[in-house]
Image (cartoon, rainbow, N blue to C red; front, side, top):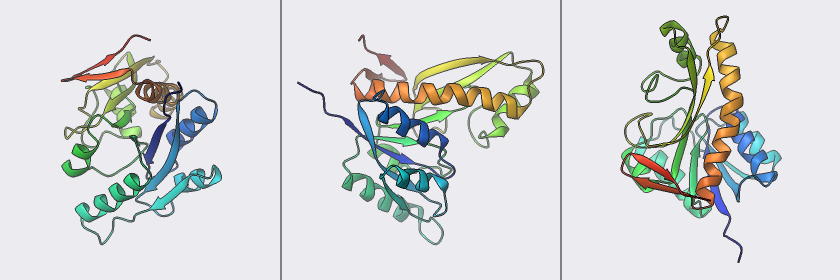
Length: 210
C-alpha cells in the first residue's frame, strides 16, 4: 500500500532559493510529497516565477493596507483550499501571528542560517547572522531546521548541520557555504515529516527509526 504524498505549501518573500531546492528534491523523488502552492506577500517576488515555471499554483497577497489578521486569514484560506499538510517558510520576512502558528502547530517549518539557539531572534536574518558569528569569533556555525512557535527562532529543532568557520571567511563566503548545506538539510527534514518519522515531545523532536 503506497503512502499518501505530503502536500507542501511554501511561503516566500524573495528569490526563493530554498523553494527551488524543495521543488527539485520533490521532482528527483527525494521527498514523498509535492509543492502544491507557493504564496508571497511580495507580488514581484521571483519565488512566484519559480513556482509558475514548474506549473505550481502561485499567489501574491500584498500585506500593505490590510490588517495582519486579514492578511493571514487570506493565506490560510488559500493553503486550506490546496489541502496542505505541511507549510514551509522559505525566506518569508513576516512575523506570523498566534492565529497562523497555532493553526499549523507541528506542521510549520523554518530554516535558520546558524546553530540555534545561538544567533537567532530579532534582526538575525541574512548576512546579519553571519556577520554576528564572525564578530563573535566562532569556530563553527551552520544551519538549523526547526518547527515554528511563537518564540521567534525558538521552536523545537528538527535537524542541524555544522560548518567550520574559516580564518579568511567574510559574511558572504560563510553564507554561501552554509546555504549549500541548508539546501540539503531542509529537504531531509521535509522527507522525515512526509514519512511520518517526526514526533514532537515538548521541546524535543524525536526522529523515529526507519
